Length: 66
Image 1 (cartoon, rainbow, N blue to C red):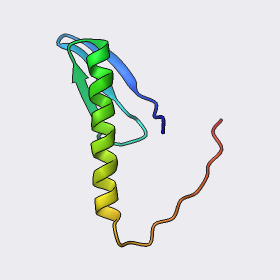
Image 2 (tube, helix red, strand yellow; image 1 turned 45 degrees about the horizontal axis):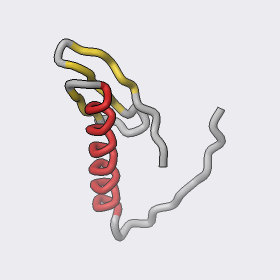
Image 3 (cartoon, helix red, strand yellow; image 1 turned 30 degrees about the vertical axis):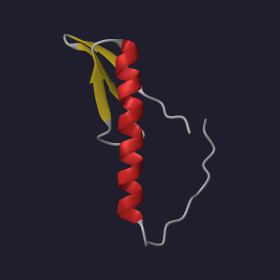
Image 4 (tube, helix red, strand yellow; image 1 turned 90 degrees about the horizontal axis):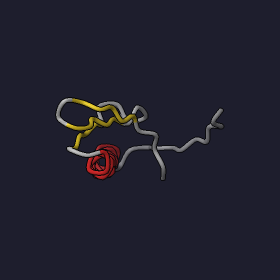
């Protein structure tokens, strides 16, 4: 899977968020570290969603991107 992330330079290094996953963000001293950290944050976010929806009637829909 691929996700769009927003990288922003900050006083401490770089902040990075994933607009498609509300509340999913991370940071790093370098751009590379921030991107590696957001990959981990996204994986943890998706694991939490999986756990929260386990046993529920979950469906998937396809949406055309513009």
